Image (tube, rainbow, N blue to C red; front, side, top):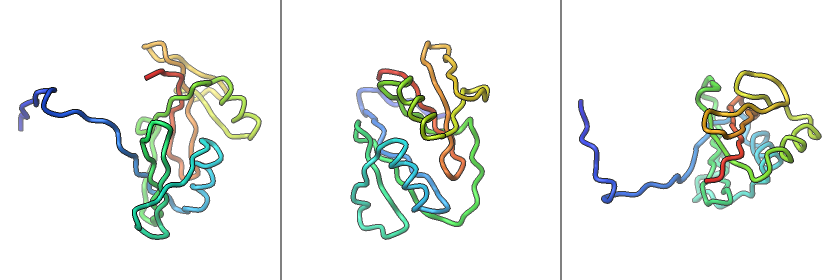
Length: 136
């Protein structure tokens, strides 16, 4: 099926949230709060198996506790930019939180073809998170 592109003047899109399926909500919530300094926000009354967080740009991360199986892959990841990548890497090292670059070399960055430095860390469920120094 060939789709006809819409006129870019008709619609504008901004990121709203990422939903992440986790095995242990308490453990995952503690990770996102500690590593990224996220503060929990109201989860729209969804109950105890859901925690919602909001980044500085108002984009949200929704953690959903579930026993369903999933297999994280580095090629499918969430990406966050940070204002001080070197400082964040020092924080990760001090907290003994493993990070690596795209090829898998520990404790170092790599530079994307567009000049952006990046690292990757895993959350408790094995989801990969890119952290880069991009300025959007």
